[in-house]
Length: 409
Image (cartoon, rainbow, N blue to C red; front, top):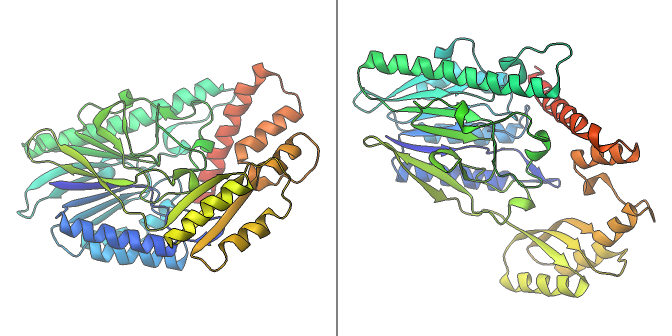
């Protein structure tokens, strides 16, 4: 069987207020064409289909239109698991209907391991793949809170809860394989943070994992898994150097910090024994660039981009020595009448003065949530020996708030 592994679509995400539906539509059309051209048997989507728990009508339209195309072949299957950005109940709502199109959705963890188990057949009706469709495991799914727990105790319980859940589902998969009486491959899905995984500023992941909170090692996953399709981290990468434990990464750059990455989807081909794994680059449907420098440098860079005549979204960081109070107005004049749009301007000179207390022009746009909390610790002169525990607790609160928001019906 040929599998295509993808994740972290984040349909509906905006970038500094700019809607990106055209990008998502272009990507999903490209993906549907790829599925047909490569004769893909199974599409795996490992979480974060949408960017929030209440996707807009336009985001839902793009999603369901794509599913109609992906399910156009009766011999093809689609398996979708929820990520931390998704509403489990929203994804699950049409699951019984979608089954008739060979689209399987697992929105939340189940106490019955078999409910996360899917046996996929080939065009001849014979079982070809056993799939452990594990969604994002929320705190209440995997541990019981106790009074007086230390941060270390909580972290240990989370990791052990994840280990226990995967062991249970994989044991059910092995029982199923024994009943089938043939060496059917076992593929698992997951949406989590593997220890050592690479993140990038602004991807919305790093801020949820302060210190080592909820990061899991390769040893958490049972050896019976022939391929593990992970989501959550946006950089395409192997886990612990394994070809068979991978993050597909986000197919579109979530922010300017990802603009330089080569985005991809992962092709997994089971013919006999060990699968062949490769990546397929995803085209760039909207160019993002970050420009840095003083005024003269910025003007030269903008002139170069104008000569190319391509539509580009820009993030600009001014690093000149002079205070440029009318910087934004001058930049807008520089790109007027072109296909270039400036989505964000960061004036480092103003920021430096704000940080030094010379003025108060700094805004929250210049900081992420973790930096704000760190400033609070600085302001209250919290000693270094207390900061680790406070940062761990803060990270837990962020995860809790994120999950609580998605559980609101």
